[in-house]
Length: 119
Image (cartoon, rainbow, N blue to C red; front, side, top):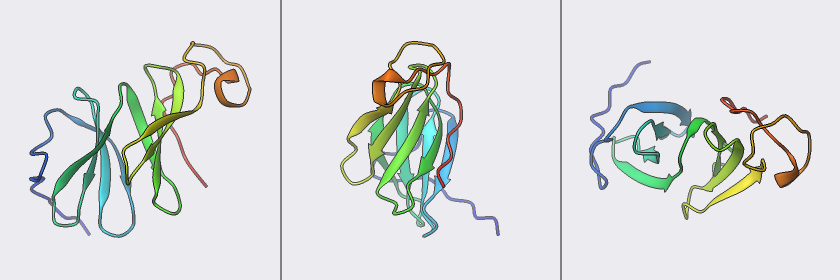
């Protein structure tokens, strides 16, 4: 089934191109934008709400319980977590330096991470 949404809401229309998308499986969607660096929530009715802002996010994945989004931060070589309810953004992994080191937290290094999947 294909549905077209008008995308109007409390935060207006997206000011830039939509980049990544994730569904909460309850008819709501999350998007990242290319130029305004916004993480947006779009309700089933098409209402837009800004969840957080984060620079350079290339792809997103929603946690199984729907409470957080995980973001591949291409520009900053990190994996981020954004809390859906509060918009708080924290680093899960990555030092911020380009590299390729295994490790936990900021001991890990990524080279332009562009995808993320949760299982």
